[in-house]
Image 1 (cartoon, rainbow, N blue to C red):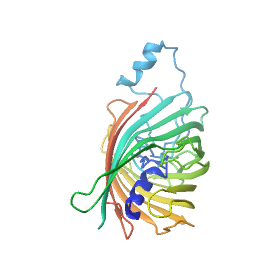
Image 2 (image 1 turned 45 degrees about the vertical axis):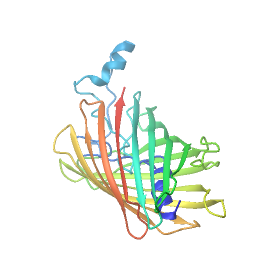
Image 3 (image 1 turned 180 degrees about the vertical axis):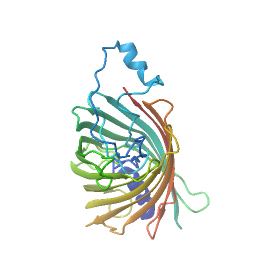
Image 4 (image 1 turned 60 degrees about the horizontal axis):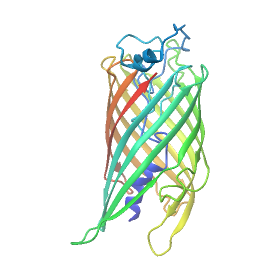
Length: 322
């Protein structure tokens, strides 16, 4: 597989949380209706809840009634995770899939990635426990010549395990102060001998922030770093590429109403000590729709820009909060 092809796969695989997910993958949201990354108006309250049966708990997310914790706030589908935490005592599950495609002068490469599974649990008013597993990758690569065979590579990714902490809550009277959260986690080598596993433990840290500009607009961003190990299996010299990977992102959310949010995002991956340390720039846009306060559907599409681009990435997902 050519290096540009590997770049677009890396953009999906290397950051298992945002999104490093995000791609995830995933991200910030709208203003006063705090879609996934939007700053919230002050510390969340802890409303008393009446005891409920398991049946009511399971079907609760389908109710259209207003939730005392506000609408669901997800880490997907933007690359930048949300700058808010899951409310205390709540369980949130996010999942989806992505398709990437890259074409160079010598080959075409594509990949399906699923289930992009995030499990987030609010364990305190300011802290959530989180896991993220990009999942299985089915990648195909074919040289650009008539009759050339298609090479198919399959394997599982590593898993991120850690915490997100709310450092600052949003404040309507101090709009200059960003809603801020910090992710501290490790990426565990659960992929084993998979070609998409690192076979090493990688620490990951990300600072996430956002400002409510108006009732309908939110500006957000993220800054992070992960120590990465990528296995280079193709070519005459298979080896492991050990490097530091940094990311910076900026995105704008627009929420015309309580249920719908649109966003546009730029993010860059930057490297030190890598075989190819050119930065990788990407742009993506997406739509988030909340049928109920505790469910969300999302759709996104994006592309690479600059001298190290990937051609195209798209995906869709579903999130639910119990």
